[in-house]
Length: 194
Image (cartoon, rainbow, N blue to C red; front, side):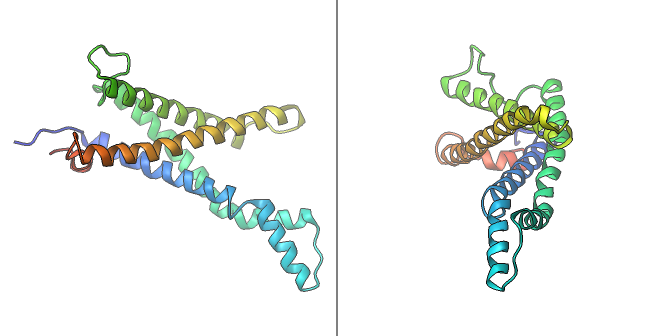
């Protein structure tokens, strides 16, 4: 008889959180690279100039923002979904037995302590990203909070880098585990059983 490793709720939360994190990272990447406002504004101004049309940098930036906004709205949607999913994940964590050894557990191996510590850091970073993201979206604006918003945006971005690195390390760890000591781990996270 197959042993159940992960409940349906745990697996559903895992995969929906993963999809939302990937969507948030992807839209942040697009925002910082191909769809950044200064870059698009420069292309708009340059293209119009080639056709004999002059446009101010502010107007070009305004048009660029309108081009980018529909894509970046998905960043916010992913964030809103993550707020709900993390609340559910924390409820699941505190009402059910943790699916990993806590890093300060005496029974945990060094590897389990490392994985557990990174897992806690991931959820702490996600919580911080979401709290800051909500503040940046809905919080006060103006000269008196400009510096605070700039610092919070920097923290938001660097936590995002950590989450991106975590995703890559997680995928590498799953690949290594699947091919060494944790065979079947992907199957367990898909169907809950061996």
